[in-house]
Image (cartoon, rainbow, N blue to C red):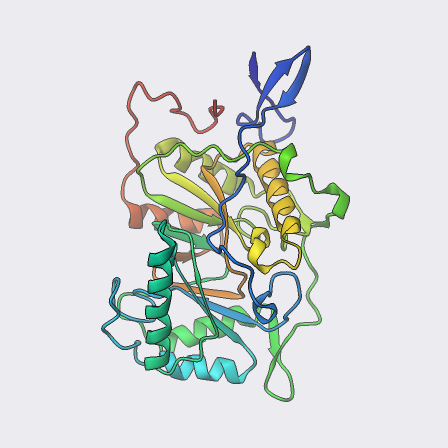
Length: 345
């Protein structure tokens, strides 16, 4: 017999499914694969930024319609005017430049290898100071507090550089040598999580995606859903974001929660990142936040993308999401999961 466990407090958790066995309620174990990680190999040490190994500021970018007007492969157009000058300036200030593209996350690894070579060819042809190229998970739209939206006719000479520099200024200042250093006055938000408070991966049930062919909304975890800074800190979620995610999920949009702290490719000990993923899955269920899958991603200080909406508040992003994706998807009357808070069976 199965029950949807409820959590006392402002949010009820209607998604955590447990089973009664021998008179005890226990969490159902439903498979060994608990998270999706686009990166399939360990990064070299100089590009493991998430866990403090390399303190350089990271500027990460989507590729298509962001750095180049091209939609796909082959890459036949040059980089947008102003891209190289801006990236050169930021590298001169000590930044690390990454390209993360969903086009490299192909089920056939041979395709991903071939496309990665094409990306590096684009980088070299255009003389871009990019030092890391990696796959990213697919999405129709992204919501991220560090995001800079790239318009159809981007101004890479003035307007966009100003936006990226303003975002960096929230975390970094230029030292006397003209290099970015982390601001000493920052006070992290959230309660520090002890190492022993992270559950083992096997203690938390896996994601349960509905498998819908509907627009996929990628929502960043920290400083978006929760005000906490990073996977080492805990804080209650933003009630308005919980309500918005429940609404979008219930209307049929696919929901993907992303976080850099769950990326095994950036951790010296990959199992630590996996345990952080387990903590986040438990958090989402405890607070009744419905979603389809949790994915890892690059760790960056700014993210440039034609699909991203820079997060400020739930009320600010909702009309932008609906403007880009159109009306909600109507549900069939016989759909077994037609409510945002329905338990996943």
